[in-house]
Image (tube, rainbow, N blue to C red; front, top):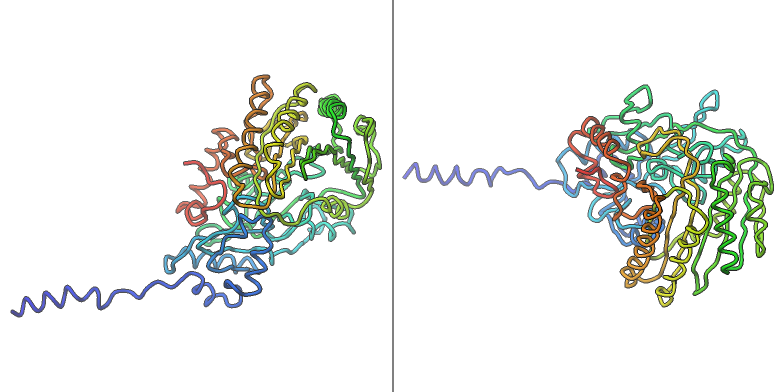
Length: 490
């Protein structure tokens, strides 16, 4: 009898003394770091969600939003959510929030870390390095550097965050001279998955430094980017539009194919060729940038001389004003969106014309999609110095990149738009592959999550990412607790 009663008491003991239910991570972080957590319905929370570029991110509702102000607060956050003492411990990291696809920089359920309060700028004594807060926007940084006749390799339109842009590569006005934005980053201050702060540079943690040059959110939360400054006075921006006719398309194909030939390379010249579909109409235009103070550079004469050319913008100004002006033609928010990218070696004019016609022929399929806008952008590749993991040939001047982007109104049209744009891109890639022009590289910042971006950089680059992850995030915090983004292939 005694043993039976004792057995029952012992059996019941675990239930009597079991640990209390784990606290929600939002509550835990809020109690340890007061004033930084906001919840659904609050002004701060609602403002953060509303500021995402696309509806696919705005429709997600994280349990809370955490807005750190210092590296120490980022460090405390990571330590708390990886401690195992709270629930809903997955998180997303956001800067500008410009990526289209769901979950790139937001999460549901979980915590979104909104880095945008950390936007400081610190110039080194010799003014050669700009230390920029991990949550800064490029258009907030540019005006602060203008008085010094300096700039950094940042975004070309307002609202682009330093973090996502630079960790994904980064293409800008000076990219044909200075490469990708990430090629110019000399150091990163980063909070790792173990909650410790590290500094990565060519001299300190060089494997991590290289992995961060394209490695996106796979290694930690970057709290400061140390970026090489470049001299920059006034630059020019010309926006030239044309009648959308076969004659204009042929002239455009001829001009761009010649512009991209190595013999015609001008390191100061960066341009974008835009074929747009809006309101049932197709348009053709060029954005022509030049990082020297030359109003109409002669390298662009073949584009100015196309018979129907209409120059609607001819600006000679500082970089901050150029970004502001170019941004006037870019919507600050969209509802739905879909985006794809690919790259290739510069072909002949006839091949460009084929690419144009594949796009043109498909547009009527989208005529009845509410609010449809399709941008077919062709632009030169950055001329990289090779300090990244992209697998591109350093110094190569004749590679070309496509950004195929759409914006539209209704979620019900997602499938149709996705199908049409995917078919366009696949047809264009087949044409280029057949002629030997297509290259493997996919640019992370223009890619959809369905595209195998990291794999496209080659097995050696993927292995370097894996090695860095094993060394600097051995428990896989940024592979498991940060589910969004392009994760390292297993």
